[in-house]
Amino acid sequence: MSTTGCGDVRHRILYGTLKPKSNHEYQRESAVEFRTVWANVERIRFTEEGGKPGLGASWRANAVATIEGKDYEVIIGPHALAVLHTDPPPKTPTLPPTASPVVLTVTYSDGSTEVID
Image 1: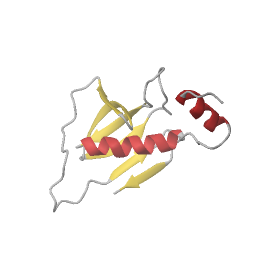
Image 2 (image 1 turned 30 degrees about the vertical axis):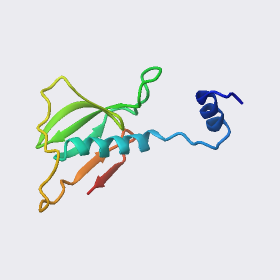
Image 3 (image 1 turned 60 degrees about the horizontal axis):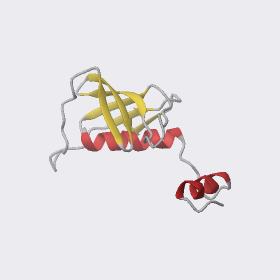
């Protein structure tokens, strides 16, 4: 076993002591993280599985986010947020304490859906 951090992680993945996350898990985390910035997001539909585009890059996936009835093409990940080809969506970073959170419907790249309150 290697003494470097990368070698140790590779060894743990190969021998089962570290399980990499599935695309579904990354997509869910990404949707929840997106919601922390855009609390008014109503729907997120992932248009691809996602992945790491290069060495050292964080995981991300293309998606369509519906905010206040308008669709925005986005690239999102647990640690990455970007808006593509459109003006940025209107932000509501925090809801008033008396407001109910916007219900978020997530459609994963495999076609399954989940409602997050």
